[in-house]
Length: 358
Image (spheres, rainbow, N blue to C red):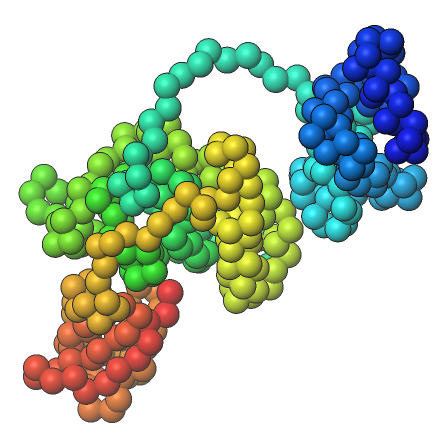
């Protein structure tokens, strides 16, 4: 219970005059010794005005109804963290208050193993290095297996772009790469594993990803193990813990990616990272000065494929079927892919355009 300002002033004066000990004065004020020292400093400078307590009394208190709701939610949905519960219920308290309640009721993990300290690498500046990867498949109730592909800045852990797909083919990787480069510019280096989407299997020659990186003067670094790209692997774990459980019953890809865009904006601009003294990822990130316009990127990241038009007047491209105007059944035509646009070419001329579906 807070004391009146006059009583508080009298106790502080008695402490300053050494009529009261620190522990006794703190007990009378109902505060810690550290807070008492703060009161003394403020009183010396601001007199009585310095003793006004600006702390919110409800910032650390929960009603019995809120306590019961939190415990019930944690027991029925154990994947939720203390912060997630606080945000979900819109309770105006610190997430540590919720965590302490969970610990007191045996609903939180409190035993942490001491591990040997290791030296972690971190790029010196934003865009010095990006990491990119494909998260292992997640099985949704109605949509089946889905894959998340994303890029992540090594310095800030800011995620330029990410998207959920039904497959993990190279065009999906290209789509994420294209959107990342469009919005945030060109990084100096890229770190990725040796998957076939990124690296050619043959001894000679380059995969499309390698060839285009070379054209943009991006140095490619290959990660032989998952531990080598630890930041994006930790990001995957956070996604699986914080985002995935709440979206597993989605019925359309639009629903999944719509929710994902909202969550990713929160992660980049609102979430205060424990790695950076509670700074947001966006606060540590700046877009690259090396930039290409969308038209320049589309021109550079052009992929050409050849396909035969079926009797149904369609072509198959990366698991999707596209309609071809009449007159080309049985013909082999060229398909030029620029960004998210398809150009169908015969006899050196574009005769039809479509939007790339991934």
